[in-house]
Length: 193
Image 1: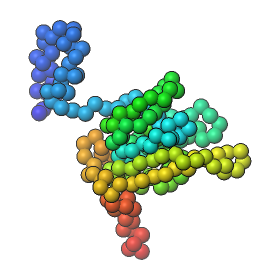
Image 2: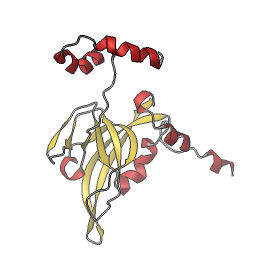
Image 3: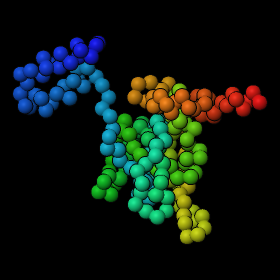
Image 4: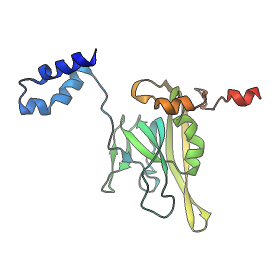
């Protein structure tokens, strides 16, 4: 459909709608045309408060997060996971609440998780279903502690990246090919030398 046609169809589609009908337009359009609502307000899965509840789902991306208001690690990354099972997360009021299956959740990428899961989050061709559960918090010296995790990768939980699951084109083009089963990077340039 051309942009010009779409623009001329819009006034006709909404002409004569009551305020109530107009306010319900998005729900009606989803019912009629399908669609996937984007998660703009994702909850945070935190090991301290939610770790006993595993987060299970497709790991979609690893993103830079806004600067945190803390001395340790103000620059941090997080994984975006679309849940395949219900879990728990922290809302803006710091309350632990249910997260329904199918929701997107932010999972902080500490060193251990980042080092082991980035290959799945940044696979340009496939999304991978994983599960993460906090185990214990260990002293790593200097008065600092780090969470440990139990992580499961499901061999039958691999799907081709399509539609909204695709990485931004610039990111995908910059990544080497990945093995769909293991997430391992195939560095053809290194193999040739």
